[in-house]
Length: 396
Image (tube, rainbow, N blue to C red):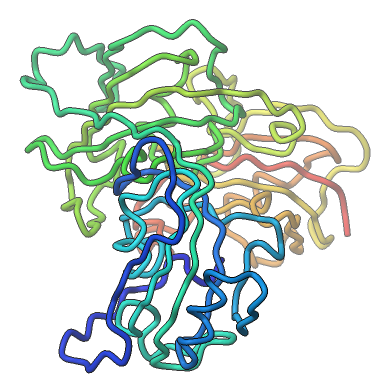
């Protein structure tokens, strides 16, 4: 039931509960009991508690019908979530722990442990609810990662630019590279040992695309070359992590420690074909353009060159020099069109796109004076040198 996902639990302990929180087992299950942090699948029916007598009868007698606001049996799609971590309402998080496979429970849930004064489809504000829930599947509990006794004694390899890695276990599966779809289990700590996040707490691996710019640079660089089954530690400096940006559990300018297990790394040729990857600028052969612009042609084109006064159509991705991606037309699935020479884009683009042939792709290194100068823009700080991958598609 998608309604149950990710709603904030509204705490109102002083409220009068029309229905007390109650858990009843209607059918015994078998096997190990589930605990908080496990990924599970359940079938369920959800009822308003206004006619609890009818609901109670319907829960044990299939010939009795009670009006419900949700029924996963009808869609034949059980709900998957991690129990006990706030992905569902509090009444479920507390009421489902300890179930066994095949077990059926009836939950009576007061509104303060459900949706509070929120109004949802089929659920008025301040509604007490009743559920009949069947546990149909549970993933095995995951062993928590442990912070190392002495971080400095790990056999770190210095990768440069503030990144160090240590391979706890070399994998033997497929090699990870840019463009691959990866699944990893990870745990992240501050150097003080305080944990700020773990996929294991959610019961399932994180899925991401290598080289898409959605991960911190320390991960993009640090996970390259791993093999499936491998376990790697990453020591990530602020410059390769979140920099001066603060998060709820990560102070600004924090060095981060990660333990990452490569569960899978699969090549998706079609996906890679439509992606831009952060270039290794040391391997490219650059031309010196006008006004301090540098560019490298990574794919040749043919046809009429881009000309001033005409509308150019391009796909592009922009990064800062630390690999942070700040924008991409490819993420939106829509190319960008602009009039060349009209001054509607940064000067580095005006100079860098001029003369490109249809199908040509360039890497542009744009100094601050040809970019956003000392003022910056959005996530781009003042004085930033920018790197763009630009593919010229032709004139509009």
